[in-house]
Length: 469
Image 1 (cartoon, helix red, strand yellow):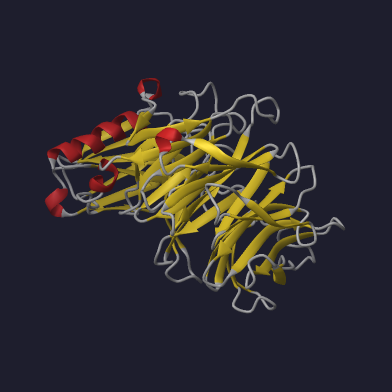
Image 2 (cartoon, rainbow, N blue to C red; image 1 turned 90 degrees about the horizontal axis):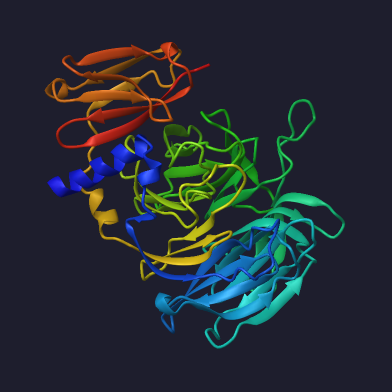
């Protein structure tokens, strides 16, 4: 028990004091395999790769990664990661693409792309892997250029986000039936609500997450829109999440297995934290917490897996956060796929995508410049969460106009030390609690977001407090 406490203590101390120069390439992961080819065509002299998806063959008991490059689609057999190599390469219908997106359904992978160049929807049959891959559908009749897709296997639906047609019409979301997997058929769409002044709330949907009859649409700067899609021809708006702390370009979301918890990322401007929401009452979603890797780093995609968030974090690589206690979210593992520390957090470089759903437990990530990595999580990732229970400390109001109050149980009042930090690691105050209540004034400090560390003899908790400007 004491060893587990020590692991969390060491990690949090160097993490929040930002001793990044001493940070290793990896914590909590073992590198099993890596593949890259720097001679491949690049975008802007750097980007070779973009997104990836994993595919598991239940009959042959083999695992694969489908990865997008500027020009092509690569199919990797990762069953034996130490012998990692592509088993097939297919032309991706267009060249010099910044973004490709993939989704698997049954024994097929659906592929789209998005950039200046026009593309097509492609469907490949994967059942003959590792020997061969077969193109079974390629057409621009449904999609000529699509930013992202999502497949809900329960409803057999493909959702196409920011879908462009040959007549240049752009549809925020089109709903496609996969009743026949190789004959996709449009059955509905999701259009923007009309505002009182006659304008639209948004023009495009960047990405979405679907679960049965509900979809969660990341509408860029307009926020996150939640829809009832039971009737694809009559979609109904349920709710909108917009004016939340650190809001920006709402990028993507993910739900836990119960459908009552949600995380989502904001991609622009750089350095925004990931949001954790309780959506038990979907008409009254509640922001519980925010979390992030290092100040300045940008989260791309965050996936809710078990009690963890697996995040492709651009410059910071892959980060894993323990979500067991939503009031105390903290990182338990990371893997820096690019040069660490970065020269700066400017631009988009590093880890684009992560696939954390393989039955083997292995994790695949794709770095824009460094290629494909296959990782094995250490057992410590799943063992840390078992002892971590929230301290009985209430912090309010948060956000605050200035004064923040702390209340703790009487049995804890002599055992908790509190420390307040800026995001760059400067300690603003430190105090041992000798009473059940304590307050401090944020208006005395510059900035709007602060790190509050609670420490007792058994554990450390990290919480975030905000000042209303």
